[in-house]
Length: 468
Image (tube, rainbow, N blue to C red; front, side, top):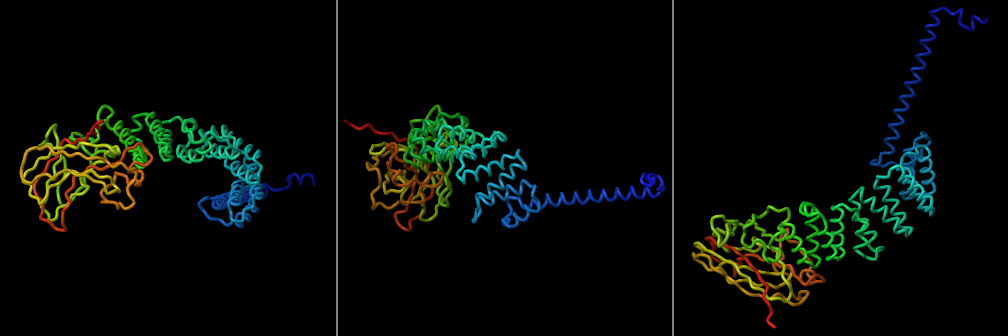
């Protein structure tokens, strides 16, 4: 019997068959196990895909079938937190199980912290978040959630440290952080600057935020303190200048713009590039440069063959189309001071100009009825001639209620449309955004066509000293 049990009496062929059968059974079990593993991973992956909409009941059943899946437990916890019939205590239980099954995943601890805080257990929530920070110290979401918890507990100093770290890892969080802490810092820009990461892009976002809050001078200081090369290339620069213009500080906007495009010269010139010596459209933002638009009534462009001074002038070749109109095709944003008297000069030259009335140079304030204009350029042919006129800007800080907007489509992009109370005075620096343009407006619904050439050069506007 002992020999039989040892298999001594079993023939060699039989022993081979038994061995092969055992190996087959083992292989089959292995295949079944691998298939189960693959199917379970596929099922869990599909159910926990954040892009998919899975009913909570389905997740519950799946969790019973795969009780050791930390991802399923985490997904269930998240679903319970945000669902219509949320069960915070149940969410906490699933999150705790997920953390127990996989303690190295910081995402699970974030969900657990959210459930703990929702149940009023701030201490445990902070502990979970601190553990998540230890697992992922450079993750912006972890720092952001911890900062918000501390902020809600009114632990301002600790929260600001975490906010600064979060924004350092993800700059896109900076605007939200600034909006959140602005009131708690007693609206002190200097304190706010200490919270922002030290990189230049973050400070540009701070300057933009301050401009939005009406802290225009502080916004300008923060902007000017950043790296000049970055200021010239950053996508935040054009909208920042627009904010200054529309929020009542066009003079500050002009000063910043000129410092960017030409730091060495031109800061005090009301008309930029009045002699057309600089080429147009070569800067990433043309807020205060000439804007030229096409029109069927004329060809408009710079002319290198004729100039009153320098090397270029502006040439308008009228096409001879009935009821010729120019109204905003040649324009530049300028900044003037309220209640001041100015002297405007320019030079004009004509060649074969035939017109019922020649073009004029106009200065207007968009959104109001205030406008002044030069005398029209005389018809015929003539060499360069000086044309000048004086004008005074309005005293009031806002247009009259009866004033209807004049030529509402004249101020075209990139000139921003500012609210009326900001365009004329407002609460800004006592300056007003105006438009210098060349216009030719028919006196009647029909007039004879205008044809021929007109050149313009050497525009200048100077503020006249008030006699005491």
